[in-house]
Length: 268
Image (tube, rainbow, N blue to C red):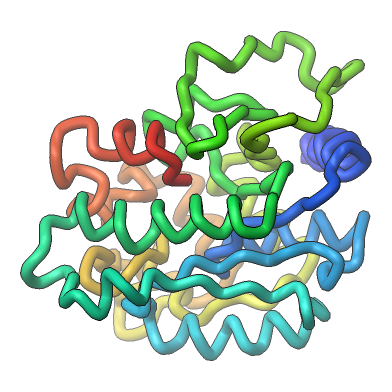
C-alpha cells in the first residue's frame, strides 16, 4: 500500500502546482477524510475551498461529525457548504420526486454552480473505480467543459499517469483530480487505521447494523454487521462479496444507466 500512497502524492503535487483556484469535494464520508488527510500533507486546508454539497437530507450524525472535522483538520475559512435552496423551497424531496431528479437538482446543479461561481480549475475528488461502473471510465485528471459536462471519450488514456504528467491550467472548464481512483474500499480502511483518522460513527456496527456507504438518509440503508471497530471492518471487507454501494441501490438504479447519465452531466 505504501506504493499507492506515494503515487497518490505524485498526482496531488502537479495538480496543486498548476491550480489557480483549487478545491476539494468533500462528503465527509470515509473516502473524503482520507483525501483531506492526503491533501493536508501538501497544503493547509484553509487555503482550499472544501466544498460540501448539502442536500439537507444527511444523517444528523454526519452533520455533527462534519463540525468536528472542520475544527480537527483546521479547515476554517476553507469551508464552503452549498445547497440548492430554490429546489428545496419548491417542495422537491425524496417522497414525491423521482430519485434521479432529486440527485440532479440537489447534488449536481449546486456543484456545477459553485464551480462556476468560485472559478474552480482543479477539483479534487475521492471517487474510486471499484465503487461503481461509470467511475471505472475515469482518469486521474478528468476534464469537464465550461458547462460541467463530462465526455469519457474526450479524456486521453493515462498509460503512465505517474511519470511526466503533462497538464496545464484549463482556459475553460475544470479538471476533476480523482486522487483515489485506484484505491479500494479495503485500502481506505487500512489507511484510516494506520493514520488513526477520526471516523464517523455511522460506519461502526450498533445492534448488528452499520453503514458501508453514506448517502442521503432516504436512499441509504444499513447492512448486517457486527464490525464495531476498524479492525473488524477490515476483516469484513476483505471477504465480503456484496458490493459497497448495494445499500444505495435506490439512487444508483433509479433509472437505467442512472449514474452514467448523472455523471456525464456533472455529478461526481
